[in-house]
Image (spheres, one colour):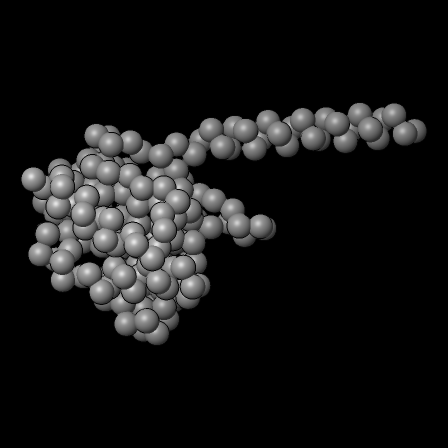
Length: 179
């Protein structure tokens, strides 16, 4: 009786390892020079925001784990603080998480955020940008950022960013690529 149970457990373990390996392989980040994956997602005010509508502008597309958490709040505050510098560089900031538009609305209201936060609860865009992650049992967006040029191509990629200094990093990279 014990041997069949052990065989079933071993088979389940092998299948789990294969599933995790295949799923991890699907998590491919877009690379510099590649056309950025297109998308349309709802923002905090319920309007539909499409990447295509920002052609001709630089786009800072940043993925973050969760509204109203410490690191995400710091990162959002720094992007907000530097909003005028991004505007001067012809750049728009778009934040994406798995949260809902209502959660984004509350976050923006509480924190005084004026740029767009996009809701991706089905993680279609998070998947397309190889940014799906896990924190314990929770599925989250990994803290990755993509700088997209005015023609729609990826100009720079950051992974596992430090939220306390990231806005400055993006501004420096934006100044460098525009030279």
